[in-house]
Length: 181
Image 1 (cartoon, one colour):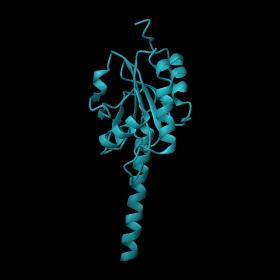
Image 2 (cartoon, one colour):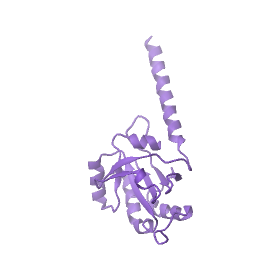
Image 3 (cartoon, helix red, strand yellow):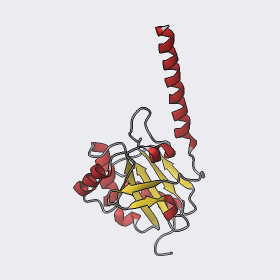
Image 4 (cartoon, helix red, strand yellow):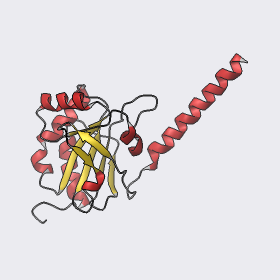
């Protein structure tokens, strides 16, 4: 009986794993973006609806504050800030770290943009980036158009050049520049 219970538990965990995998694969370019609401490291609350019909949005999910790759990615976006700010886009990094942790992380890097905080993983789940069995996001970046639809999904990111890569992508996607607004 114990062996049957273990086999059943294993089968259920595999089933849940595959369900999570399907959810992660569910979002695609052209889909309506999740209606996220998250507090930023700056203390303000940001919601998808605030940008609808106003500007494009970048949400660059990363696994954990104060780690090597995440530090490089956040720094890259800061260093490319002038390029990114040429476009009519609000840009953020995001993680499942707390507001306190992300606030400290943003201050340590002197970031000029907020890190979105999702300590319960609900928003990461809606985006399909929540790691199975962990309250941690995978490194995936979403570009959302003014129309609220996903314009691009980047699941392979060069942490060192991510900001530059995003600026190039915004141009390729035809995201409105602030000068033409």
